[in-house]
Length: 310
Image 1: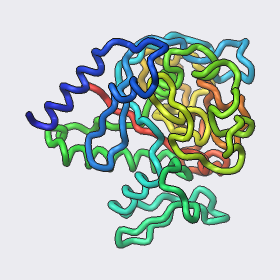
Image 2: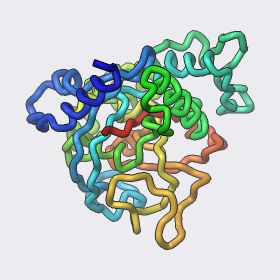
Image 3: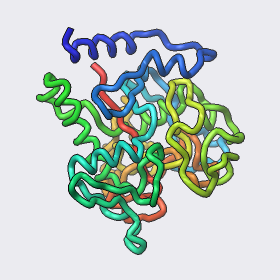
């Protein structure tokens, strides 16, 4: 059977598969729903569609006004990267294309180095290949996604007429995936606890010092690693200071019906290794400049890819 036909059949199977019970081991969920479409492609996890309450209640400790009003969103089935794109994966993109990201700190010239001849280097000396790729602006993330689509199309020619299927997730998809059926501040509960994530006060060995590997902590019930803490994730949505007029179909939000929305900034999610725990919540959100002009965010921002499903 043609590889593309096999892939579609597999995806249709996992979309139609029953939702796992809460006591199902996360590793079993991930194994049943995982796929990768090319050599070096990110490992993806198929996420079943459903409805959820997006945002946070006024009673949630650490809540910001931008997290409301809460609203019900219906999300279609999609796939999301099992982890953030890693340093190794981003270096493969740079080496193949010669793409040169701008430094995220011009004063220190902190950024990805493109030497040419298929040689590229990460921002930190001797950076582990399993760290999340950070020090990236929104355009860098989109450039990687465009390259990934060319790689997948080369392996699956029937996709040639499409611009996708890979993209950045919408922030609704991101929160839906991060919650994994929970309605608490974090997928593991209300409190930050200890050893669940990497932040300034998360109780991990990396706290407020350094990045952790993309799979350093246990996965949530969708089988996804590292959505909380470590590094911020870029999403496809333009920044809005509240959810007034927000779409309810799970799609990315450009401008609102009233003309609002700052598309020079995009939503980032999840919090980073140097943030205090109030930023490491499923509903926490912020807006960062697309051009990486804000050092505190751009130097800590990475991403994971999403994929449309048949």
